[in-house]
Length: 116
Image (cartoon, rainbow, N blue to C red; front, top):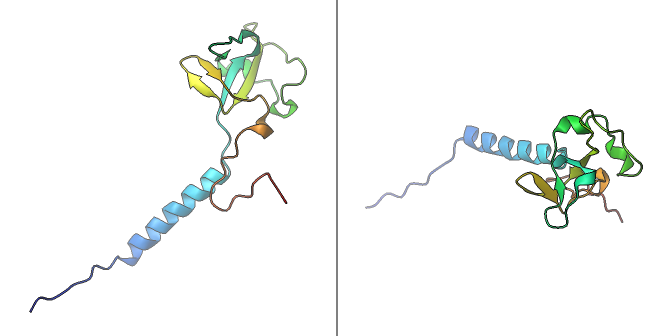
């Protein structure tokens, strides 16, 4: 007679797998949206905004949402953080300067910004 065996997962395998899934869910919940430092004065209709060194954006506040003129960095660049953009080489487009309007990348169990 043929003996049928069933494969059992070890409890440590199940626990480690569950912890990995939980860690991934929690880190995606609190993560920042993707951002690039761009020169606001460099907009090109084909390419978008030119990406510049992040030091040009150090002094700018993300809470203003792009309202008002920012102080220029040492290189004379009007640097501003640009969120959730499509990046192609040294150019970024189709994003937003308003961090609160950046795409919600919340993971499992994260509360969304839309309420009811």
